[in-house]
Amino acid sequence: MNNSELELHARNIRRNIIRQVSNAKCGHPGGSLGAADILTLLFLEIMDITAENANSINRDRFVLSKGHTSPLLYAVLAEKGILPDEELLTFRMINSRLQGHPNMNYTPGVDMSTGSLGQGLAAADGMAIANKLSGNNHRIYCLVGDGESEEGEIWEAAMAAAHYKSDNLCAIIDVNGLQIDGTTDEVIGPNPLDEKFKAFGWHVINVDGHNFDELRAAFKEAAETKGKPTAIVAKTIKGKGVSFMENNVAWHGTAPNEEQTAIALKDLEA
Image 1 (cartoon, rainbow, N blue to C red):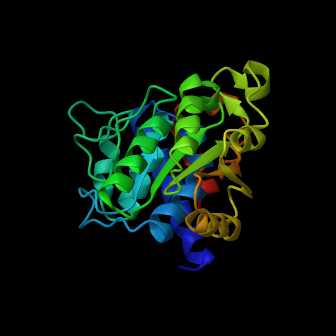
Image 2 (image 1 turned 90 degrees about the vertical axis):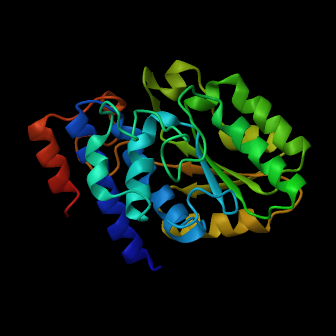
């Protein structure tokens, strides 16, 4: 798939993120918009997930460790044809499969229930170890937030993955510099995340999280790296694509009103 096609898919995914959160009047648009390019490439080009194998473990798997950005995951699954588009507007509704945090028991294509920050990388590491033991050659991918990386369990998981030489595990660290209470540097200062993952024994690649060429090359390098897990440290813009949301911490977990939704959707048509 060429970059122009990916860009069109990413724009549609961002529009569906806005529609979900606006319709539900709650949710987390900022981080969802910021990581949209990463998951667009991952699901539409890199991973071998399809509508037919969505409920199988015999494919590449993905863990959304920062589970509050579920509008992004649902929009990507719809773009992939695993979820129907019309179901997106049931986001956070009673009895919907698309709850505020993803639930693997109800939603096809969701490989781990997440929401309590810090736990997803450990789950992904377990999947990677299980694949090694069972001879399953598929890869495990995990999206981790930079604010989430302040959680101690992230580093326990990082240490374990390096110890077990989980070279079938690729973590993508979404570094947008913002979290619910402000900038990451103001809250506790997790940086430099690249050097920390290196110190824990990981192969580390720094990329622009909105550059498809850099991301594509990083995923290829990760797949070719043997003997250690890979962390792709991706610099992103929280709220990417929506003028009034970009780099604005206020949109971490706030839904746009009707007027703001119209502006956001217009921005994403450009």
